[in-house]
Image (cartoon, rainbow, N blue to C red):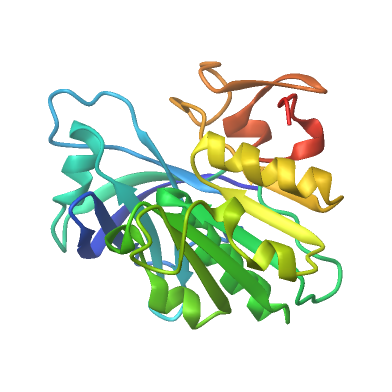
Length: 258
């Protein structure tokens, strides 16, 4: 898929949480085609300590408003600067990068989308894409507390939403792999993104139940084009650059001990 280097304009920057911001960008021309699971490399201007672009998952595409959304977790100077961007500012973005999730050949209501923390970001666009194609996705979202569950209204507008929180403040108490829906649902495909221990637990569940599963890896990605080798993952096909051959991989390719 063709990649673009674009100077996009900030339309809105919402602080959803102390540690999360929702950055919305637009362009004068229609935004390029982007697939669920792909990401962007965003240049950070105005930060003396940030030299590399920041890889951020594509959270959502609003074609009516010609906007691309990025859910940003504030973890360092670069992401904090992005969270401070004001409407009207210009931000340089390289996108779309990486591969995408595999779409079902026919519409299905047995699709489970599991997200944890900022890993819920690509699940929103994936769910919207699946719904547009006639599927009925089920979301399973995990967080530490109710304050860390983001964009619930947007998820609920697309499909059924199940939640877990570690402190029990929203949904079922515990981790996503402990949610009761996993014992009730008869899923045929699982998509997941989040902390690696969570994804490994989801992958183990999928493998033990013979369910197809794709994970969106969050390895350190500096360049986004497979040149720096920072994001290499050891797989059944050898060492693959997650930014180029991923970030989405079928668990059958991974050498995880699950």
